[in-house]
Amino acid sequence: MLKVEEQTPVQLSSALLAKFDDVKSRYPEGKQKSALLPLLHLVQAEYLWVSTSAMDQIAAYLNIEPIEVYEVATFYSMYFLKPQGKYAMEVCRTGPCCLVGAEKILTHLENTLGVKEGEVTADGLFSFRGVECLAACGYGPVLQISPDYTFYENLTTESVDKLIEDLKNK
Amino acid sequence: MSRKLLLEHINVPGINTFEVYRQKGGYRAVEKALKTLTPEEIVEEVKKSGLRGRGGAGFPTGMKWSFLAKPEGVARYLVCNADESEPGTFKDRYLMTHIPHALIEGMIVSSFALGAKVSYIYVRGEMMPQIRILEKAIAEAKAAGFLGKNILGTGYDLELYVQPGGGAYICGEETALLESLEGKRGNPRIKPPFPAIAGLYGCPTVVNNVESIAAIVPIINDGGEEYAKIGIGRSTGTKLISASGNLVKPGVYEIELGLPVEEFIYSDEYCGGIANGKRLKATVAGGSSVPVLPANLTLKLANGEPRLMSYESLSEGGFATGTMLGSGGFIAFDEDQSIVRNTWNFSRFYYHESCGQCSPCREGTGWMEKVLNRIVHGKGNMQDVDLLWDIQRRIEGNTICPLGDAAAWPVASAIRHFRDEFEYYINEPVKSQTVPYGMANYAVPIEKITVTEEK
Image (cartoon, rainbow over all chains, first blue to last red; front, side, top):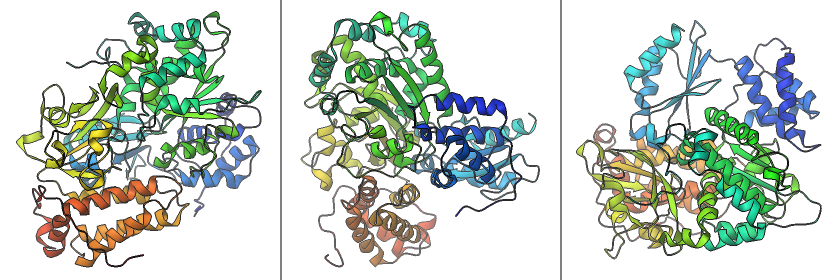
């Protein structure tokens, strides 16, 4: 399952490790494994994906086995196990959003960016994928962009075009 | 205008800050609870209020609290379930975004009532903006002396933390949520033991939905009896309804339970009718897991009386002619929408979200997705409809957690009420790809379902 992508080992910065310490302090003594999901988010926010090297270091930090990190990272859908575009767009593709045109937005992204779902554009800026319900059904179609998960609502093909232009010029 | 308890001040500028929330009477419930009530008295008020869990199951909150074990020297936990992921439901996002302090205040009062010194709000990971909002609100409350050591000089200590999830629907199930909070895969636990006995870290734990916890605030402020006067019968109080789909005004509405469904859909105070002047074909009244109902059974009970937005009225008639209030995710379909396509979409959702522990759900959701996929794309045959019926029947009731049921019910109800539309896709494989079936023969529920074989 866990495909090892081409990767260079990462060195977690002291600033990141300080954030780790803060998260770990939220749980009782001996229950530090609870920090696992938040730590994976912190790593992903820093590197835009979660590499095996980073996961191994999380395991060492939490004093747990690497497999305990891998099994969690592969279970939850938010963790990217391979590099994404700088702006990883996630479009809700579940029922209520489809009633108001989510499928059209996905097709439009594919045509506009010229890549298929899961691929990264040549300039490294964009990737996109359909995801399941984002709990914003009344404002559909919606998309979010990691790593800070900014939300865009009531999408039209025009507003998506504008969003892509704005991000390119950022 | 009906009474608003949770969203009363939603339009006040700055209500997301501690200062404005406090000016509007916020944190009175904490003062009242910590200074004048005992934990037992708070639990008693919640019992009197008749409040039922707002996350979907509708279990009485006061009763859930009273099951909490209290062994000497063992920590107890309150965990707020903010893993809102049920398709059609977005009320908790709304509440946390606009009035985060309502949740924080509810958490403080509830933690005090349950004797918890550390509490967690488990928020689905995708809601990073809401996580940041809650963390800011917690810091403000702490700075004002409502959290931390010796709250308001009463000697009560409470630390409150926000925990992000990783993007898994199953973590809305309370034992899967606890597994996830312990840093593991979200596999639901076998019950018993229930979390009230052995929950987080094996300690007694209560898990409550965001809206349930926020509702504790008006219950303490006004008293359980006052709260119970709102609503109808055993459906007391107000409920946040997330309205989506083909409506003029989709959004989050606070209703008094007992509001006629017809008024909710068509009145200008709420959804304002069906968008683009079309007709209503069907609804999913309580989130994707509950049975889909054709328009006539949405608006009226089988006996012709108006159907109401309440736990009892929505489930009136059982699954033959009724549905459920669930989490209050109200999805409306106009006459051009395809029930078959939506059923396929939902089945893909459950297939994606099944944790994989139990074979009937892991395999069955995949089978249903596969069969529905071919029907939707004009490649189905007539036996597929019976096959689908058979699969869903074998999932329901045969799994550790209710995800299996949640996957089975939408399929069963779609076949029950819209079998003719499934047959349209099979008989017209080409036409069905471009021409909507339109209004189904929704007035007549199909009485008999052919099942190919018995167990």
